[in-house]
Amino acid sequence: MPLLTSKANPRFKALQARLKAGGARRESTLLLGEKLIEAWAEARQTAAGRHLHPALWLRLEQTAPHPLETSLGVETQVLGEALMRELADAGSPPAHALLMDLGPDPTGPLAARVIGAWGIQDPGNLGAILRSAAAFGFQEALLGPGCADPFHPRALRGSMGAAFLLPLRRVETLAPDAGHWFALDGGPGAVPLAEADLSAPLRLLVGNEGHGWQGVDLPLGVRRLAIPIQGVESLNAAVAAGIACFEVARRFPG
Image (tube, rainbow, N blue to C red):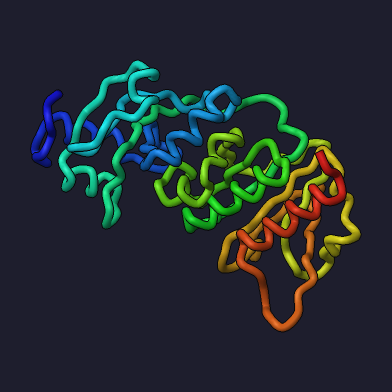
């Protein structure tokens, strides 16, 4: 199997081109490291897992093949350390990576429990929100305008595989259905978390890290939801989402 060591190699340049686009224009992503690849493999029969289609296995030079490498039936390319490090954008290159093509976003009615991210700009925060939502039984995610790319490597690392468990649906506007819609916000008129009706169908929205929902006209039917805090002005968006998701699971287990 040939070893790719030069950035000028046409195969490597073609690989970079496939990964260049981000956000809604992204058509491919890269799963970096055995742990993330194995997390996808465990979830590949779910609706979210089937959204990703393996296209190319990348193995670091002088590394033994991974058991999944042959079972997936995709081409393998062996990369030199410098090229693998460049793809990973990290100090230590992973031993394995898997190029995935993305399928279309889901359509149709929303799931019973939905987490929404609106203007979450940090990929790590978005990954943490998805991870908490998946851990506490949420079944789908809405990604609004200005939201970080859920398939950015930092978002994938932050979600620890949750991006393979939750179908991700990009939307440009809020169009509330008959569910219970709440936007996490401590402003005037907000419903305290302990008093809110969090039963399904539930749509729980998290706003921008810096300004939350300021300047956003929430549609009728979307209520503001407050988490009582003391001594600080606000909570990190991912922390607030985790608390709210836990409260949902505590009240309505299973």
